[in-house]
Image (cartoon, rainbow, N blue to C red; front, side):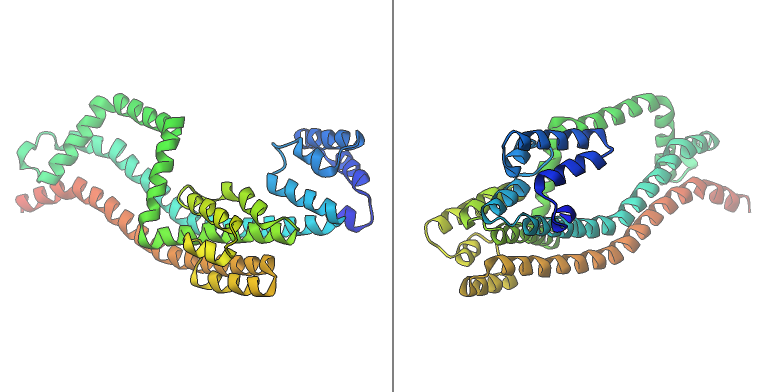
Length: 328
């Protein structure tokens, strides 16, 4: 984009990128694009021959710009689109980092206590037998079980991890992830996140000159299986002559805000901009929700993990306290 804005031609721009690129894999892709263009192919056709490197949305944007001879503007729209998508993902990932780290560290502490400390305490208390509190006896049994069957448990844990990483395990995880849609608060936020990405992608494609039905066909893969059938039905309705706002609303692909914006876009003939405005509104809404959720979930997780670790420690020392009271 910077080279095109400077007046460099597209062929010379690709050659410049090849010359400056130091990473072998990327350089090979660019060289293949340059070779295809030198053989007379268009820029979009050269990109299409490298599907592992260039997304269909990017190729479609370039192809549409070739009809209007405005490649730089199309690239600028795509760069802005990709940056905004990455910003939203980054905010959600940053919001999840602290809870995930808290769970991971606390789980390691609990695992250390149960797998190393508790078995050693079990030797101290094994002569007390039935004089131990029932909770301490459970912990004693756990410690003895770890010592006797530790390798078997470790093998079972490894098998569970291998199963989770296998293709059937990933499919099972994907089905379990879909159940989150049924949760009232989380499911609605997941739906809004999907819709915001749909609106932003559609807005970028429509502003690039791609027809509505063609753009809708291209973005179906972006939606989750829960929303994809609705988008397919909405596309069918739009192809039959329904307005986009009515077709989307009938399939649950709008919110109260986006419905109004789509209606305005239809009246003004500026649907691409309205879709991007709706996406920006919902992106900000999601960012605020993620920030509030992090502020609530973090302390709650800390409290739960603290209670769990504290309970294990108390159970380890409870028999000592009882012995001290009996001596007095």
